[in-house]
Length: 340
Image 1: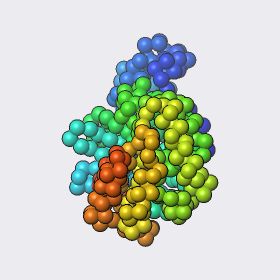
Image 2: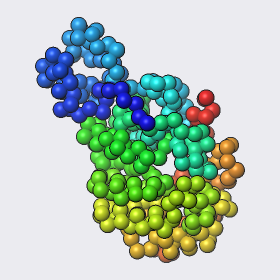
Image 3: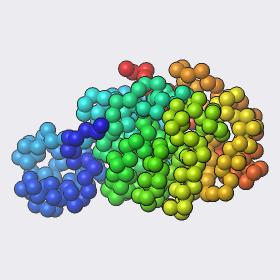
């Protein structure tokens, strides 16, 4: 389910121009509206000072599609985590991750998540609904406005499974690219894997980075960590990943959360090598960020290094991605759960 209420956020320049003309305004106001929405981050039509005052007063309650910041935390590394309140009162999470050369926003695609992964705080919190494209774009604009800095990268790695909300996610990608002016190659969409959806996504021919959350080197272990894996066997998932590379000509990224003593042993690394040989891919190893709701541990540094070396020795491209903002309830779903 998605909200059906029409909002201005998410509309293209042509659509906004058409809308202002329907309101009896000249076409050039469409460009003004587009600029105030996507560059200035207007939260209401009343803010748009170039519009006639009487027209603004008539449309004062017309929904732009902006959320409000319900809560915000700032970690020692300057990562900012947000709880955003939507128009229906539901709460989602977004994260702003600054570095010396970029500002990345981690966005949610659903309110909660139906996948119920065993190690994930969001999965423990249940699922409410899909987000609209405008609600996804709003997260980027909110973080950009709060940092007073242009967002350079967006990752769809927050709450929810993007491929279960594919239509709205694709719309959001196009708006972020064409209207917010973020290059598609600076956008990453992450999925745990949904039958038939990877091929459907590939046929969109987007230039985004596509990441698959693997987290296990064999079917039995993957079913334990990801309940939905029972309906999408590892062999079938990897076959679809190979097909994705064939269709798009772009390599695929595999996300692998390292859980101490669970999936980080040498034989797991060697199993992974067998699966990933023969097509373009890259592995992101992610040392686990512990949560109170699940009894998993972060692996020891030597285990992480050993796992990575085994992949490297077998010519698998690999990197380690350490979590940011650990002291700020950074694991997706933790902050939302603590403020319910």
